[in-house]
Length: 362
Image (cartoon, rainbow, N blue to C red):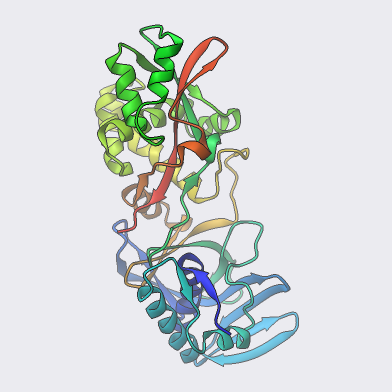
């Protein structure tokens, strides 16, 4: 019987099958293209199911599947065929939910896959042994441009809010109410401009959540101020790409550092890339981050054409540059994330803005 799953779930499964069928992956470039000179042989992919671990070992003509209650071989060309069927189904479906194509459900049973999304506690989708089955396993997350909603790099909810103190003019309560009623609920820009128009100033105050404040301090003691100004620019100027926002921050220089540090050392670019790498490795706003290595060592990135590119911490600069040029700030729900309005706290009015970072779809 046919079943439905999201494009994100199908995209993860497609990447898994594509890697097994090819027995290799190409390293990606910062521009999300294939690095023709860097092909990495895949010896084994390990995946977690609700009933235990499966190892998919790449042999010349077949894939050997080993688990607690399984040891069998499936022709590699079958993985290739099913990967192509899934790819076409994703591309030919306009909505986000894709019905399983003919024959796919039977193949999933054959290769002992019962959970479309791998069952891991460490947030990896699967682990790969390159070159040799005995090689150390490298944990990967799949990010796919094959339509649907991509998992954000940072979706911290209200934990990822920044506080701006409303100064300049002391507004009466009716004025506060009028500002908060301005426009639609998500018209954050309209309310910010109205505050400015009435003589108010929004001055950066702090990271709203103490855990996120501490996590950002691991990147830089002033990372909160830098990111808050980037979020402000996004709302007021409509710039969303991380690389372009960083260029604006270099001109604004909210941390008041020397030109030499900005231009010769690339201070702001470096700090932003360090943050992106930490987020890619699993840093979250509401969970304490101490900089130690996580199980996530990279991304298997699926392009809109269906090519799987490998980015990993072993090639740190390329991974950092890829994230820098292929991420953007996004606008989360004002209701869910509790930001975009003047709120009173200990007699002072604050206006919160939210940080959400995603991978660009094209």
